[in-house]
Length: 162
Image (cartoon, rainbow, N blue to C red):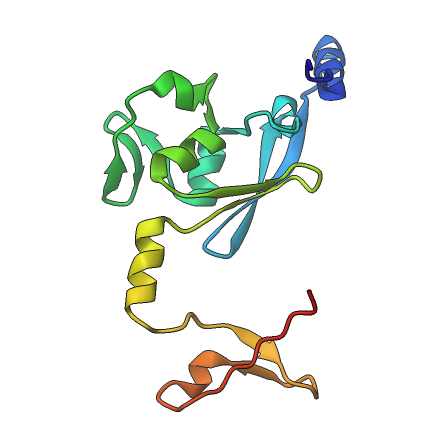
């Protein structure tokens, strides 16, 4: 069954004829740091690739395109097929996540994308047997962080109704 046309294509065409930009505001999250970015309307299509200006990807995620590949600090990942990653100065965030070996969770309706932790990093964290820090309220509303209890025995009880 063919995919239904996206109304965003019509908007992009109309905006282009009127000389206006057809940008959508999205939020990219990496390491719990939400960053607003602008993406082309085609990025808002359900199942379509999320195309973000290269400068916004570098600002939001710290990964910049260099001749040696996608780099953050001293770490560079070679890019074998630049045409699959970069189009018209925009980075395909789905392709970037795949290149980095990191999962990408997207909610197109909410215009939000979260870049997850790589399997290697998750395995390293699990092998350390140290729980990640978090903060939750108790029954009276007082906030408690796990780091406040480092070195002590702590019993955590998790409950889910499903």
